[in-house]
Image (cartoon, rainbow, N blue to C red; front, side, top):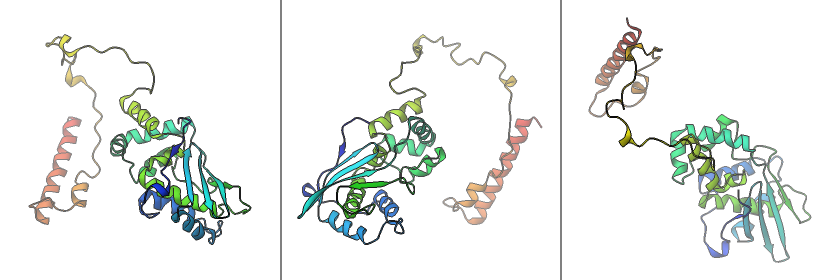
Length: 271
C-alpha cells in the first residue's frame, strides 16, 4: 500500500449511520465484543459513547495500524490499533483463491466487497478479520486496559468507517483497493501485475481461414476420461419445481436428466 494513509471524514463533517448497521461493521464490533472475558466490558459502552459523540478525530488506516486522536474536555489522546499484515506469499494465495471464485472476483472488480469474502480467503487459511490474540491497541493515557476507553472509541469509529469503505479492512491487512484489484485482474488474466507483456498475438485477419479451426489430427483419437456423475438430478430435486411444473412433472424431469446423464456416460465409454 502507498505510504499515504487512508483517511475517513471526521464526525463533524458528516452524519454517519449508526455503528454496527452494516455487515462488515457488525463483524468488527462482534470480534471486539466477543473478547469480553479479556476486555473489561465497562470500557466498551463508554468508548461507544465517545465515538457516537464525535470524540474520535483524524482516523487513518495504514498497513497494520489504525490511528486516531480522541478529544475530551480534559485532554486529547493518541490511539493506535495494531493488526498483523499478510505477507506477500499469503496475499498471493489469497488472490488466487479470490480469482478462482468467479462471483467474488466479479464483485471485487466492480468495486463491491462480498460479505462472505472471508469464506473464500479461508481456503488460503486467511481471514481479514482479527483472530483471537492478533489485535492490540496502544494509547498514551494511563489506563492499562486493552483496549482502554479511548481505544474502544477508535474501534467503534473504525467499524463505522467500514460501512462507507469495507476495503479499509483489507488495507489494514496490507493491500489497498487499487493493489488488490490490480493483482486480481492479473490473476484472472494469467499475468503478473507490472510485469512484462507476453509474446505478441497474431491478428485474426492474418489467420488462414482454411486452417484457423483445424485441429490438425483425428478428433476421435483424443483420449477421454469420463467420470460417472454421482447425482446428476440432485440440484433439480433440491430446488423448487420449475415454473409450470407440478411436483410429479418435476420428478419425471429429474428422471429424464438421470437417464440422459447415464446415456452420455455410456456413450463416452464406448459401450
